[in-house]
Structure formats: structure tokens, C-alpha cells
Image 1 (cartoon, rainbow, N blue to C red):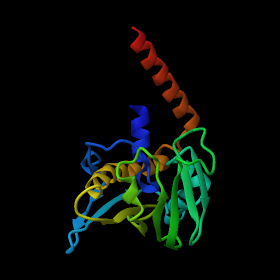
Image 2: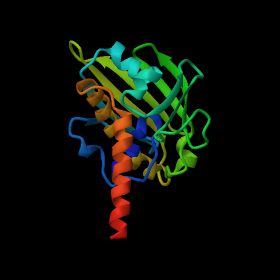
Image 3: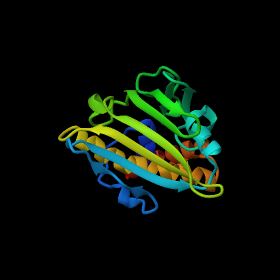
Length: 212
């Protein structure tokens, strides 16, 4: 369960994992303004106010240290147009591993917006062969003193499968990721060593239960 929750968070960076029966409605703080375009394509659009400045939120998305504070235990960021965000939920992952998430940076406006497209997704992501067609836009806007509204928009979800499955997956995952981002400012960065230890303990307990 711990593993599936963490893996599902990956949405922004393209976090893969099983398809989720849940939706963004599981996170009432997250505003869902998704809509359908005239041509039938779906636009996934979620937003949340985070208690931090745009500068600090920007660092969470564009620096290796900042990204690791809330998103994944392994990450390598080469930020810039044409640059790459490479990440993984595998605690033992290293750069270049075949199952790493790799998102190409298409465009950005400093402390305002980042556009990215996926170039490699974990094999477990349902519909991964089409995910490279989806563009993800991350926008930051002032939301009062010391607060920033973060909006994640996914475009390119065509009618039918596997787009419908991808949309469902990221509807839950992006909402979860927004909450994780907020939590990293409220409670502090994720302690990935503690998280790994909990996963190992849960796995060992599950094995013992199977034996009995």
C-alpha cells in the first residue's frame, strides 16, 4: 500500500504505477477545472494554493535538491530549454536506468511556467506508448502574501483508449502530487531513508503473514 501510494504521486514527473480507481475528488483542497475542447480532446487541469513564495516553489520543480524534497528519492535535473528531468521512485536508481522517468523541458518562463513532455515512462504505466503525446504545463501565480497557486494542465488527451486510462491515472496522481508539494512546505522535505525503511518493514511483515 505504501509503495502504491508513493508511486501514484508521480504524475507531474510522470510517475507511473497501477491505474487508480480514485479521482482528484479524493483531495478536496485541489481545484479541478478540467474541461473538453471543441474537438473532443480532454484537458486535465488541477490547481492548489501552496504556502510558499513563487521563488521557493519554482526551486521545487527546477532543482535537483528541491525536486527531491517532495517528489522522488532519485532525480537528476538539467534545467533549460531542451533539458531533462530524470527521476525514479527506486531508491537504488541511477542516471540512465531504463525504467527511469525522463521528461524533456520544452519551454519555460522563469518562476512562472514550465512545459514538459515525456520521453520515457516506467513499463508499469498503463498507456505509456501514448503518454509522449501529452504536454504538461506547470504554472505558478501569486496567491497572496507568501502563497502561490500551482496549476498543472495536461493537454493532448484524445477520445478513447488508452487516453482515457491515462487521464484517469493522472487525475488522481497529479492531485496527490500537488498535496505532496504543499506538505513539503508545511511539514518539511520527505525523509526518503525513513520512507524506504517503512517500505522494507511493510514488505517483511507481508512475507511473514504469507507464511502463517
